Image 1 (spheres, helix red, strand yellow):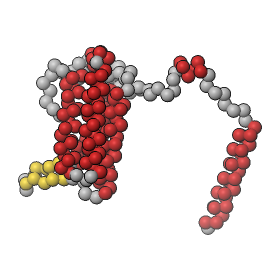
Image 2 (cartoon, helix red, strand yellow):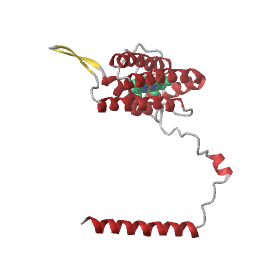
Image 3 (cartoon, protein in one colour):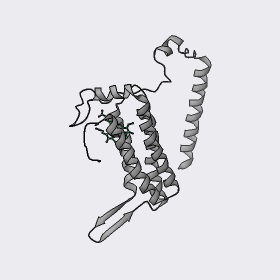
Image 4 (spheres, protein in one colour):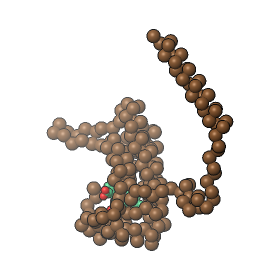
Length: 197
Ligand code: HEC
């Protein structure tokens, strides 16, 4: 039963390849993009399609949660119980979150992103999206330093994960949380005594 399928597959492949060669041989090559067109919308520039708020909610926060949730202490009636990744697969799962988090902070640094989608309303004690954008525009260097500081902890988390060092991962997780918080206080809710999440 296997043979006929294999033969058919090969024949289809041969036909497809022949078609491709023909298309390449006789087709007119696509014109190179004109310099004016590429200057108008440089394709190498990253596109800031999503807002900071959405980036936080969809990329930074879930990745950070993945790192934080991996290690911890449960308090039960029976006492305290530590949990941590055990198998290689479990460590690999946490590692994916750390990798995503490290790169997410590069996205945070891309210029030109709106703070929030149009119409988003600030919560109590929070700056409006327009005020957040003004602050970032006024002091982009600090913005980038806050992002770098958080990214640095994400890199340390990755190192702890690769060393399978549960204590280090727990400690680095705490420092990461502080770095998230200090950027939030500087750019999001400077006037609020919001408790840490
Ligand atoms: C470089 C600064 C900066 C860093 C670092 C940062 N954030 Fe944010 N984050 C912001 C700003 C600004 C907002 C508010 C965006 C808005 O509401 O327009 C925000 C909003 C959020 C939100 C709310 C999203 C929503 O849907 O309302 C969450 C959750 C969040 N951040 C999580 C984190 C976590 C977790 C970390 C650290 C792992 C972190 N952030 C690090 C700047 C930062």
